[in-house]
Image 1 (tube, rainbow, N blue to C red):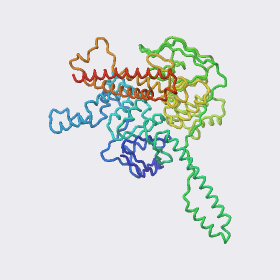
Image 2 (cartoon, rainbow, N blue to C red):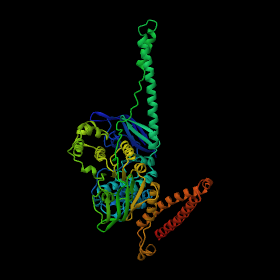
Image 3 (cartoon, rainbow, N blue to C red):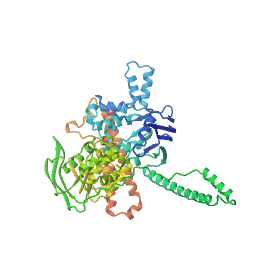
Image 4 (cartoon, one colour):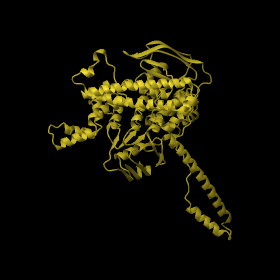
Length: 617
């Protein structure tokens, strides 16, 4: 489908990509990885034809189409759902033909093709895409201009997904998504009928979505089979084998050079020495194994002593205007506690962090900090608070005016801000560099407690790994909001769910949270009706066909999810080994889950049939 051969692209006269080869075939899902600035986004632009290679070839099989997410934040009065439908260019062209009054042969051909591409369900599919990405049903007809920048980027993503393309290019698609939307996108991409190229710094997202990794390293593209974890193992093994081959060759070269040095002047050995000199000249030298620059070993220290209790929250409530985000929150934060906040977008996770740090005040209840506690706060808007005209060294001097310049430079170097980075104005920094500076400023304070709101935004995979290791080693308390599941799994001992007006301990792990999300979506498929609305589907003279199709489509998704869950539980109960290895309570619990899922399937099927009858009418 996509063929890249001997590709070279120069940036400022210096090769960014050099003599690269890459082939992508139908239904392949490729994760494009590499350190920041290596050329991932540039390769996408080359594939789209926005820029041309300096040499080599980038060719798409004739007749194949490419979809991509526009990076421009649009401003339009068009409704959100119509904006997304415009992503299917062919659909819109057929609709124009079908809107004509004259029913000629072209019209009938367009109608036949419209049915073939499921044009009549396009609006329901667009609605499903938007719902999956977090848009509520009542917002789908709102103008695009009414949404914030982050939500407009979600609209751009939905529009790209609506395009029935042969190759889909996604550059950091999870940047503007919460965990709920990321989980939905993973499931959607696992069923995507075309080929996929995705750039992402989310390890678990790559593991779920791709079956090949294209790694840009040293201006070349190396291809590995499997997901990101498979790539890491294979690359480590390849580096080890390369290092062993290099060492073996170096020993051979040293032996030959020693022979030449000792016997070159001896007449009896001169011929053999000359033979070895020629062999050395012909030898293809193996370069030493090179690991990419950009490895950082971060260190965040906590004070040597800390009080047992850092914070007491009692009966705390908060809301904006008439919107109550949560109420009756109780929390005793012990030293060394490690909490991750989970919940849907807009439920109040960031607001809860702001309350704990004292940025805003609760509407009711009490919040008591133990005196002299130092807090390290990393907010989503933290990068905007940095002084663009100041250098990292100047930022550090404001914090520690009595420290020597050498000590401050060494400290910044631990966060990958050594060399000329220390003396450059922050305005010239990338998002990743700004994040590293914000983390350095936070770490210098040696806080008793870290409050981190999406700290991995703008960080590449290597820096995320370094932050994860640093937080694992940190001995203070942590309260974390993040959609990076690898970070949450590694750092958090407790999960708190912020949703439906509550903030409370979640009894379970991330898999249980994922199940909670799926159950929540299933329960929202058929919206509850008031007594005055009951019977509306049967009695309405002109039911809304588009709305019914949308609800039926959601029900089919919910049925698929429920059936998979039921099949898994049935498989476990049918395994004789379970009765030997599990306790009676565990078996009873599985049986109860099986019964619940069977009842859920029955209810969903009845709802589906009700909608089917309404559609037939």
